[in-house]
Image 1 (tube, rainbow, N blue to C red):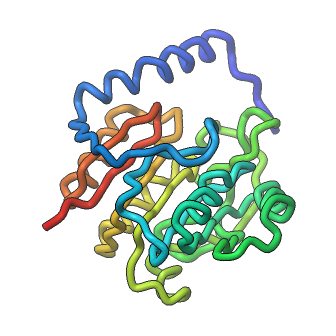
Image 2: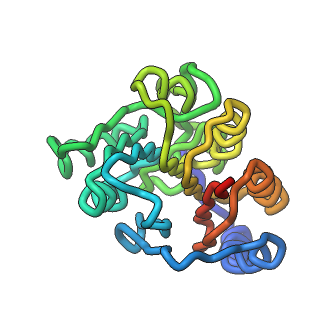
Length: 233
């Protein structure tokens, strides 16, 4: 069941989305790099340090939706291997239409979580949107069930001893997934994460600081998209 958001709540959400990122810039230390470039479309693109990727890089990109411009840009720019993850049927249909046999691109119709289990993915409040949420960001009743995997489990299955890039656009599950990645001592060179809304600003700050404490620098804030890079020892 889709629920219409009350007008006052919509106004609050718009103001929060506009000003909360500005507040976060004041409380989180950003260390820009000269090698930062944006790859992909205006909607689905990400800012990354391009000097840290090569043909040998392995990239895990969670959250396909209906835009794989970033995924394909990585392959075109670096010739690296990209594994994309999304359990949503519409995402699978989009990949089938736009990249049915793209070399070095592999699509996995599973969700990312902190463990391997089957979970519910709740619908967005706007029926035109594609992304569903494990944590039910918008408090809806409709859902589908899908298999989920942890990053460590996927790496073991796919035979990847390391990750160069981990991108998380997972509709509120990013806090749980990042926690499991840090606990497993997986250290992707680059972490890109969208902190989906609505989520308390304090929780976003706490998760980012946890990643920074694990040896990362925050190099870019692009609205709610954060790019973090593992510091050199």
